[in-house]
Image (cartoon, rainbow, N blue to C red):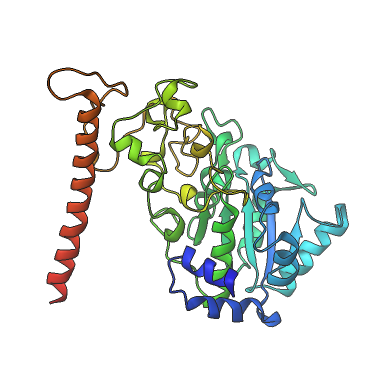
Amino acid sequence: MKFCGVMAVSMGLPFGAGTQIAEAITNPKRRPPVIWLHGQECTGCTESLLRTSHPSLEHLILDLISLDYHETLNAGAGHQAEAALESSVKENAGKFIMVVEGSVPIKDGGIYCMIGGRPFADIVKETAAKAAAVIAIGSCASWGGVQSSAPNPTGATGIPEFLKGTTVVSIPGCPPNAYNFLSTVLYFLTFKKLPALDELGRPKFAYGRLIHENCERRPHFDAGRFAEQFGDEGHRQGYCLYKLGCKGPMTHANCPSILFCDVGAGAWPVGTGHPCFGCTEEGIGFTIPLHTEADIQMVTPAAEHAPIQTKRGAGISAGSAALVGGIAGVAIGAGAVVAKRMGDKDKGE
């Protein structure tokens, strides 16, 4: 119940929805078959899944879902594994969840990714046609990932683009947080429908807000305190990494809220002192040079950042200017929230 309650809250559901999730996952008849396909990728998404602890991997694949096919975790190999895939698709048509990790190469007839002598593109099309839901996990599956970068010699394509006309849930990230995937599967299992998605097919509960909004370094940004280079005093003190190329201000994800690998505070790139490189956004991760400053997509202090070092003397100090700038930024943000609430109240009345 504790686990289900936490999962409900992470999806923005009422805490009481945890009871419904618990009923769904403890009902053996509702355990969904899952077929997990691998295309052009590094298996990092699977590696991320292997490190979940609530639920643990064995509880997930043996009790919560029925993992019928997964090339990395299969006990069998060769013809035996392919027979298991064919059998599961046939027996569970219209009931199974298809998960795709990796992009689909479409150039030259798809010869750049062959499984069992068949192009991966053909396997994806045939399997998707009989699936109850399709999930693209990771940036490679969501929009092509690193191998789709110019000149894209294999014609690497994301699953939503490859399966145009089919509803595909995208869980981007390199790797994505495994709990975003688990939450999506549990939501589908519990409510027999997909969670609310944004215009890119990403679950809004996970990708509805900018990383910049919930980053633990955001107060430093608002106060004008920035690391200027790796290893400098500001970097060692945990100042904002915007000037080092952090893409958090233009990247939608919940990384700073749920972290990675169940190891506690700081377990995400910015928490370890490295700028976010925008892996959940097409056109940002693997596209914009890493140390290029991001475009700000929120109301923030002026682009002329106050220096970190303060000077004593007549007039307002640089440190005071930074503080005033931070207060102004917070005031503007708070004013916007209040205005919206007042507008909502007027509409209600």
